[in-house]
Image (cartoon, rainbow, N blue to C red):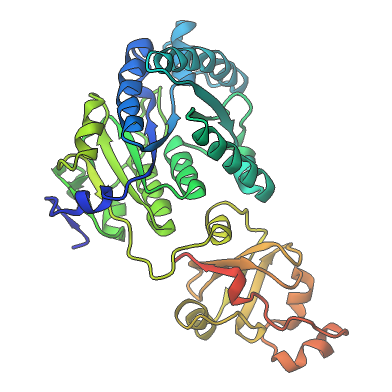
Length: 382
């Protein structure tokens, strides 16, 4: 099995070099008595900062807090009203966080992000630079999705994913998702929860099948499946992630002291960790199209560190241009990699399956790069 029910030193090994930490807190953990709950959380974060750990906080709670202020029992169905709740609740949420931080002699700063801020390379770099500058100044970054302006086209979707993406951008050592359950549990085919899983070495289809989705709570989105998605992002990028019970925020301290609580998704042993541009390709860039590879090309790209040549391409989808990001899928149509394409979709339609010596004749002009996607601008994500 890819998981175990008892820690065998994995937590201590993961935490030994902990320098930068992303903590995400869910809506249900702060919406009731937000002044007290944010104060309790910041007390824990202040203790970590005193140990020399850089902390980035991702917080949910703006929409439910706005609902509470206006005494709304159910989440509005109208998008404008949801955005209004977010705008109202965010002010109160940040006021509580700043008051709590001041008690410990430091300040917090708010960043509200959309998917576009992460998917655009320049904006992604600016967000990263801003966060690094705040950490250098000793300020606690407090981050939320910008729900007051987000619509489906620019929506990240949930703060579990946002936390994982920020950890990847900042090359954090660990992401901790504080939630309303004590960890990830083994479950039966009937959905009944079994024993808490202590350590997960690698995500597989069996574990994904165990994860549920949104439980219908009017104050939250996502569910365990979004946490596994976040774990996949972190571990693929070379970082660890943990799910920890946040009913009592001292559980965070217990986990970071190496006690066997919560569930730890182990950092993989990567011979060649992803560089920053590879992380951007894998997790942030929005693919403009898809290239369909035959079995030989898929094997060459994923197992033999080869560039993608036109002869191994069965076809393509999308209206991409030279320099765009594209998905690479195998014969089973499963995504195996992403890369920067050297030809437009119109050019590729003329050279699919061709030998490199035939490219100039098919395109009617000399060809500088015969690789459709060069191995130096390609990242494996299967």
